[in-house]
Length: 343
Image (cartoon, rainbow, N blue to C red; front, side):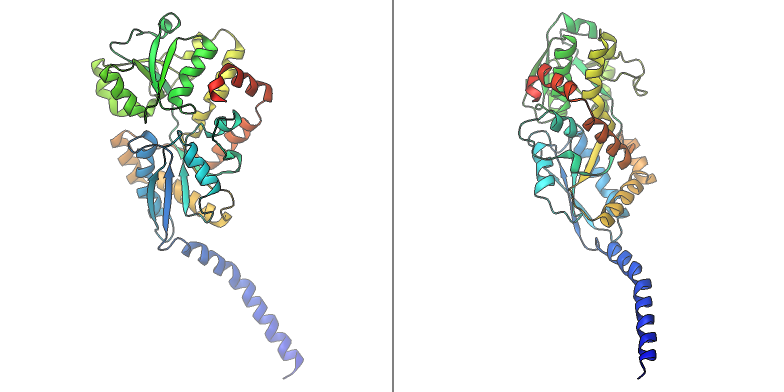
């Protein structure tokens, strides 16, 4: 056997290996999820807006992932997503089989040093988000406040989940920055529970994302619930006649403060992966996520159920995170001073 013959055979073998390698790698990526079970950790209780959206998405997401794995939803509601975020960050498998559905407030909570939050949101891998929520405050028909302007002279008892959750963040910011007179009663499991408390006369109001009230259309039509104002600076196309809370701001500093805190609406209902998930699997999940959200069947079902499933691309979430982490430390310190219970 000549050395020339051996050299030619070796060269041909190496060439075949090089040509075959990408195909084998792609095949392994496509096959990874076949027969797998993906756990989706939802940082809110069953029946919450996040939970409903996550369960709807899971039905379609698994269909668009190569290999058609099963996505199983697991609720981890303690601490308004803090427990879920910590688990996903430090304990969840980093192989692409655990997805987190966590609060849109997670980045600002970290920047503000919320107690118990050990996860570093800047290291999460953002898959994407659904919905582009506007935030509002609503009151019951027997509440002492029926117009936003009255909030500066009359006390309004509002129900909340916990610090870090929008039901608590919104009235806290309005009290501290603008001088409203919300009295916050926390400890409820979710917005739906606060709405029931309003019906029972336990509290007068609640502040949350507008999407969480889509199932209460009859309550608004009958007058049992009334929209007081929108927390957005611009007009929410779903409620164009809503008064903006920014109209009560007297200084640019007040507006800047609220922009920082409320910028989290850009996240919608975000989905994340733990750090270090292989890039190939991240790409697979991101593509399947977008395909699922744009699936005509999901679009039709979400419209019928009145669930906002508007796509928030992972690039948008990465940009929002980058911008928040670029916030001047002085402004963050102002937030900590003005809202002590968010530290």
